[in-house]
Every structure is written in C-alpha cells, then in structure tokens.
Picture 1 (cartoon, rainbow, N blue to C red):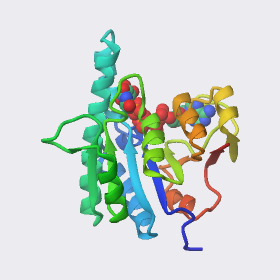
Picture 2: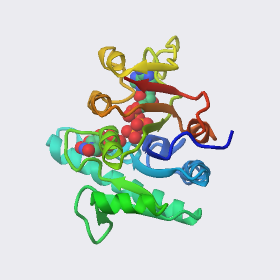
Picture 3: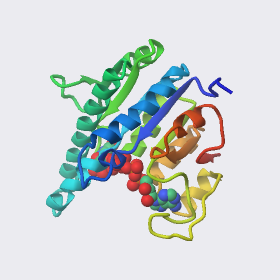
Picture 4: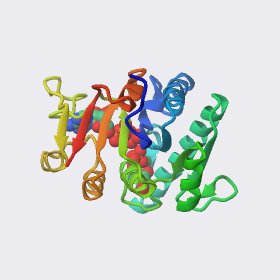
Length: 238
Ligand SMILES: Nc1ncnc2c1ncn2[C@@H]1O[C@H](COP(=O)(O)OP(=O)(O)OP(=O)(O)O)[C@@H](O)[C@H]1O
Ligand SMILES: O=c1ccn([C@@H]2O[C@H](COP(=O)(O)O)[C@@H](O)[C@H]2O)c(=O)[nH]1
C-alpha cells in the first residue's frame, strides 16, 4: 500500500525528542532522523503543517525560571519553539524540502508572522509550513497550538509524534505496568487525566471533530506507516 489516507495533516513534533541523549538543546543526529521521516512523508504527497515543541530548550532553562512571573516564563518557552522551528526548517531545506516558518509572535526580522491565508497558500504549493511560537499566548502549550493550527488549516488529523508509542493507562515512563490503547475517545482521555497531551488540546480537537494519532517519533518509519493507514500508535477519536 503506497497511497496515503490523508491529504493534509498537522504534525506535532516533540521538542524533547530533539535533544536525543543530551541533557538539553538540539542533537544533530536526532533532528536529521526526524527530518528523514518528514521527507519520506512529503514524498507520499501529503501536505504537511508542523508545530514543534520547546521542551529541549525550555526544560533546560526551567530551573532558572523558577519563581519567575508565569507569563514571562511562558513567553520564553514560546521563543524556544522559534529556535527549534528555525533549526527544523533549515534541516528540511538541506534535505531538499521547501519550508516556511510562521510565528504567532511578531519577530519580523527573523521569521514571517502567521497569516492564515498565506499559510494555506504555502500548503497548497507543497511547502512544509512550520508554525512557531505556539499559540502566541501564555498559559498554553504547543499541543494546543497543534490543535488550533490543525483546525485552522483544515487538517484531517493531528499527528502527535512524541517519545512514547501511544496513549497508555498511565505514564509508561513512570509505570512499567501501564498498557497501551489502540484507540480511545476524547472524553475517556480527558476523564482519565491521561497526560500525554493537555486537556485543552484534547477538548479543542474533540469540539472540531479533529482526530489525533499519537505515536513514537523515535521509531523510524512510524510517521509513514501512520500516513499509509497502517496499525501504529493510538487513535484518539470522538
Ligand atoms: N497516559 C500516558 N500515555 C502516554 N504518555 C504519557 C501518559 N501520561 C504522561 N505521558 C508522558 O507524556 C509525554 C509526552 O508529552 P509531552 O508533552 O511531555 O512531550 P512532547 O510533546 O513529546 O515534548 P515537547 O513538549 O517538548 O514537544 C510522554 O513522553 C510520556 O512520558
Ligand atoms: O501557546 C503556547 C505554547 C507554548 N508556551 C510555552 O512554551 C513552553 C514550551 O512548549 P511545550 O508545548 O511545553 O513544548 C510551554 O511549556 C509554555 O511555557 C506557551 O506559553 N503558549
């Protein structure tokens, strides 16, 4: 099977996965592996919008941010996602894709600001669009940004590529007895407080009838398998 089941997707890439085995920052091999998977996905002809998290940078500065005003710390986190977005777009360009970064916070000397019709135009032209700076608002996360931009772009699904291979009954990093769901409803995920994605993101996707697939970015080829409709990760649905 080589025909993708989606025409347009919103891919949420884990910021934390970018640091690989390092303590923080961007690990070159990790970003290149991620981009290889994105290239394979683009070769299928799927239109791809991307949101990347900031955990690899922001969790590194978090001890210094302790005691800071929450909104100020959140703006620092959003700026961390701009750094990751620039690195990702650069790596994608080096791999032969055409990428555009659009920021939810105005920093026009660095990247263009997010304008919805322009982003839609880029996608139609086959460019990969990276949405930086989350939603542009404190008290949110890049998961919510992924849900928001996914809905705005008319994506058929939000693909959360993270460090675990799906949604579990408990955090599998902390509880070895946790079991993985092949699918779960939004309501169940919210009611059970499954923290693989924040509740605001789950709720927005539920309201917009936008399914989510959660799978491992550390498993090479998993993204392509998801796009081809193969059994991979956990589907969160209505
Ligand atoms: N019920 C659960 N099922 C699966 N993972 C869970 C669950 N509860 C908590 N987690 C944790 O959620 C993490 C994924 O979400 P998180 O938002 O922290 O990371 P990310 O999105 O990959 O990183 P970033 O925020 O840097 O983009 C997993 O690595 C896992 O340890
Ligand atoms: O819309 C948003 C998105 C992000 N933030 C802040 O950035 C960090 C990093 O994002 P992650 O999703 O955790 O990778 C996040 O912890 C927030 O502090 C934000 O305020 N608004």
